[in-house]
Image (tube, rainbow, N blue to C red; front, top):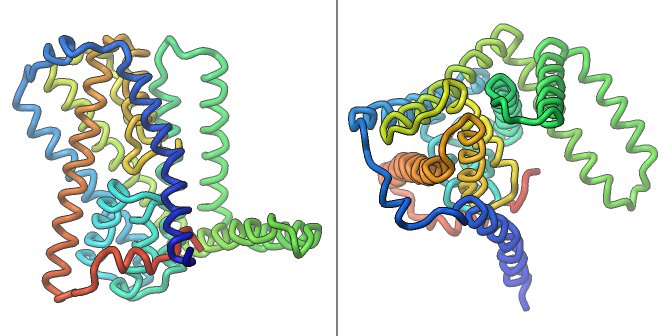
Length: 345
């Protein structure tokens, strides 16, 4: 068996656990729902379709603006950075192993006039901001049925993410040399032949890149990015609010915001591309905890997820194809993907 065949076989085997996890969550979410219940779902207020469409693409636009501001030290134009970001969103929805983010870092770095390491640092900072805001939404919107232990864990997660983000924004210049010394000390204690050494070096590399990115953006710029992140997630939450009004799903004020936070945090669970299964389970669990019926909550999560996947993938795919036609690119997409590393540097 050739090295290429073995690599493809390993990649396929890595897909199996995620597929099984998605199947389990889909079964667990819809196991008590009958076809008759599905047929009862109706569009109650059609005008809310406008809200769904508007807030979907408003959230995308805000994320494009945020990422372009992170790239201010480069020569990237807004249209180029927006194209790359939307293409990566579409690829992440249909391809495994976060290929969209890897393409953003490696394939499109020349299009943005910068290096992969600079883009990697912005991706790290982007994820830190998103996780902080989502955990904040989660803590604020927890329902009365959430247990004490869950509240303690959520509050702890918010505390850690808050301290970490503030430390990076306010103390990047001070913390960088301290972390370098800490990693040097631990590297000295690990055998050169140990399998842990490469992973420790990767973690150090990623953290230092993030610090470098934040230092160049500055404190004021970082706080402005945090504001953009909050507004972007509010826009995404309004997709949920609009969808609930569309089908007449009654829930209290906090329900949609717990759903948007928990559903997006569920992407941390390894599953198929697009987070199928875990997303629906998270939406159902969130809405039920705020008094919504189980069957309608599960069906709402499925329909909403289908809309988000189709709308974002279609927009990103269209932008990708238009660009390839405009620049007369003849390299097949699969060849570009095969040339990428299978994991982050």
